[in-house]
Image (cartoon, rainbow, N blue to C red; front, top):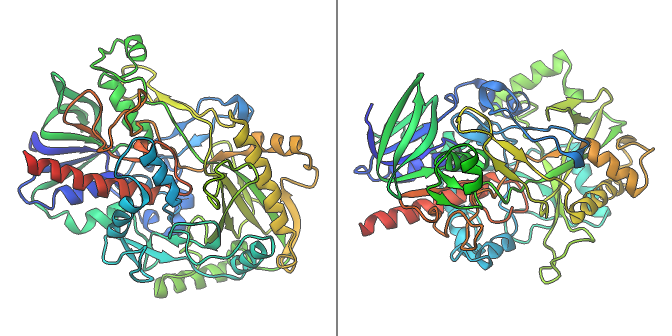
Amino acid sequence: MKTKYDYIIVGGGSAGCVLANRLSENPDTEVLLLEAGKPDRHPLIHIPVGWTQISFEKRFNWGYKITADQALNGREIGWPRGKVLGGSSSINGMIYIRGHEDDYNGWQAQGNPGWDWQSVLPYFKKAQHQERGASQYHGINGPLNVSDAQASEASDTFIRSCVEAGIPEIADFNDGPQEGCSYYQLTIKNGRRHSAATAYLKSIRQRKNLTVLTGAMTEKVLFDNDRASGVQVRLKGETQIIDARREVILAAGTINSPQLLQLSGIGDSNLLNKFGIKALADLPGVGQNLQDHLGVIAASSVTKPVTLLAEMSPLKLVKNLYRYLRSGEGVLNFPASHVGAFMRSSFAKDQLEKGRPDMQLYFTPVSGYRDEEGKSVVDKPAGVTAMIHIVRPESRGSVSIRSADPQDLPEINTNYLSAEYDRNVLVEAIKKMRAIFATKAFAPICGEEIRPGKEVQSDAEILDYIRANATTGYHPVGTCKMGSDPMAVVDHECRVHRVKGLRVVDASVMPTIVAGNTNAPTIMIAEKVADMIKRSAAKT
């Protein structure tokens, strides 16, 4: 194996796969991609419904848990993050959402030129192949396939119910305004998951200038004075040093990227000194600003066989398998949700940005809940479930190392529900979902409420239910935030402040979380920064 490359990319997740593809387009540029997890060969990774099994599978998951959160009754919620080629794009629910256009205008307003909606839109389009065809908002012939969710009786009923409840039906969540109800768009192609690894790596693995190593645990970044010179990697039980001629790029995600910075001497000097790590750059913002979409479930039984449970008899499973093999459709082609809504609560504060939602709803034809590990558990009665997220939370948490040992998982403090606004919005979210279930349009299939249950009525009772049952939306961001303020970790080109030759390019650089799922924005960030890196290289 070579011991020197132009670029070393740490993390083979969504951002890392994009960077590996784009930076190796120049045959004279040698690129190394390091992934701590396994290759993405397991068949359940590629069958969409497999996400329900692999999301918490130890072979593909870092196994993070948050520190016991008193606001959530002291629960330690599981936080699945992908430890496999493709990262979380190989284990997620495959929903393609960009966020609201003003999310990105807000990034620019926080001191990040070139990150407004009109500037990032071309990179969303560059990344995608939208099966609907090209438009002002969508591109074709990009690496990432984006398809429409399958229609169903339950989902169509949900759409009609939303409209009756005052939520307008829209054609596309990804063309800017966003507020309304619609079918989701998905990273699925011909009935198979289209992860970042499939989209960006599969067709280019033969490039002689690209090396991809799995099972490679990066332990820290190495420096020559204040310039990143390479990485220390644990590979096949041995420690190896690999040098970078140009840059080291951390694409290890919202948890691992700040952890690696701290292990490498970049972070709050008080934390680093505690574990005997010499502070190369005192950046107190490393690991701070953690944000996530907290969600809570409402569920109802149904009176008609319109749920997935109705497709689980042995005969129907055989039919579904045949249908899937023939056309890629049916139960096996099932993402986290087919249909949903973005809504604005009465507590939304952006009066100058009318229509900017602060709640996202995922509807699925299964009644269930999440256990303490966060795993999905199906209730016995046939039913439907809505998971409602607060998508613009004010609560902020942190990620910090527990020791100088790279094998020790970091401490994750979410501070969920620490902001009154977050509590108010989630209480209202339950009420909105109940209003949808109570519509005339939903009456033909709606039975008894399963969750929260008829005994939960007052705001205080609803909040108690939230504290006992709310869980992660799997969208952590923000721990290496982009900006120029004292708590910023990287600049607007994702270069780490106060050192040279080091960037962070993943969801951790988002200064504020976007309204919606975070995979598509992470891919966009990597596409945009890849161009920045190329321009920088051309000048030297």
